[in-house]
Length: 395
Image (cartoon, rainbow, N blue to C red; front, side, top):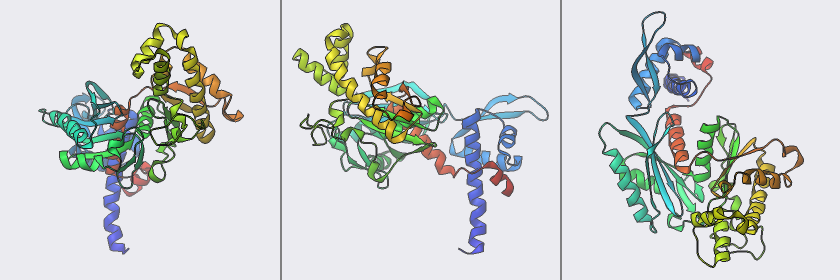
């Protein structure tokens, strides 16, 4: 590349890095003035002011009327947008879909939550999501910057493709983010549901190293290492639930026999309780039945906990995360179940990891994770993160 081309690219790249530095400062420290950002990042006030002007135009940050007092001329406060500018998080799950607005500051708007039964065809699924999204887009004084779309199954992120979903076959070999982008004209990103949960839990726990085990219908795992999602070719290694653990066991939605997710999920518990009462029960109905008298489902509960412990131990032994967040409903049945799971899984963990991995119940939903996912995408579109001192040296 010629020196002339390089010299033209360098200011553009540094400008984008500075814009990203402004956003990262507001993410980490909250609302502050231009002068505060300059002091925090080590970037010159003039360069910061120019970057702020550009980022305000994107809608990611806003200037409030509140003023700060101190030496010199009063300055207005900058913050990540929270009201007039929003993003949309969508989780597509086997039984229900959920949609929710969230601010650029990452806070979900729980009052906006809508839920509807997952349509049985791909076309109807897109139409239903579009209907709700347009209702929000048409509201006065509201601007939606993008959509995060959480999906189960195997996703080829390089091709923006839902390759295979064992429990939701209507999205197999489809490109829902592309199709919604074409319908709505909004930036739309596809996020594997376990990755979405990781991003949501990162915001809650404020750590960059963790795993999430989702045991709702399928059994999946997502991992963050150093703040980065672990992702390989077409979505591996998320499909923990399709390791065979029971020879000649139940048939799985993937077509195989005896997969871990056939014995270690909320759905497993509902199936076992249904067989016990000779009546088909949903997960919520099975949990309600169990809550009336837990002793009458002790065998079914122990069965699922034992196999869920296998999953937790596998995640610990493979990734050794300091924190594993469990996403599902079964562990909420009794206050002691999480501790029981920790004890059972501990017996299967490698000795060095037994006391170094904390088990918690997940604090976020997949729709909240989808919000975090679209925000990550929008922030990354600004430019790469670089040490502020490097930017300052070229300011």
